[in-house]
Amino acid sequence: MPGGYNENVVRLIREIVEQHHYRYGSPQVREVLRRDYGRWVNRKKVACLMRKHSLNTRRKRKFIPTANSNHGLPVCKNLLNRQFYAKGGGQKWVSDTTYLCTVGGWVYLTVVLDLYDRKVVGWTLSADMESVHTTIPVLSMAFSNRTPREGLIFHSDRGV
Image (tube, rainbow, N blue to C red; front, top):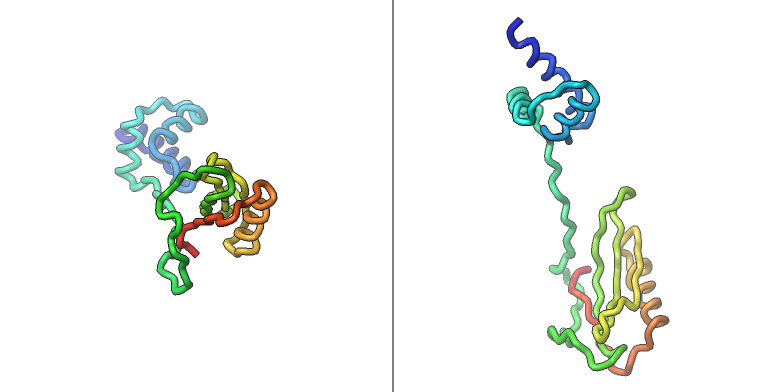
């Protein structure tokens, strides 16, 4: 019965790939074949059979959220002007918000850093980008952790 072995292996590969929602490539499929079905199949053979029978993995495009810098909101003059050092604490603070992908979805981390000693003086995690959940709590924490000096320069990017 020519092709019988391959037909059985293809059937198992199809089952594994579908069970794992087309996310397993040939190395993972080969491991499941060995571990769960006792089938020792070369990875290149698995890859060839997957390709031949259109069982390729579906690549998920990486989502990279970006800040919208092309907004019509007023923008302050850049007083920091890339001078990322300070002679004392509470003179220059920088802030940014970043997106973190978690099991529960996207969360937003907002941080305030004092350029004098590079210490985080305020931070907050939030489920949205509303200033009541990001900017206000992070600045409150920063003010309670470190007293700002007169003439404090607070710098953040132009994202919304």
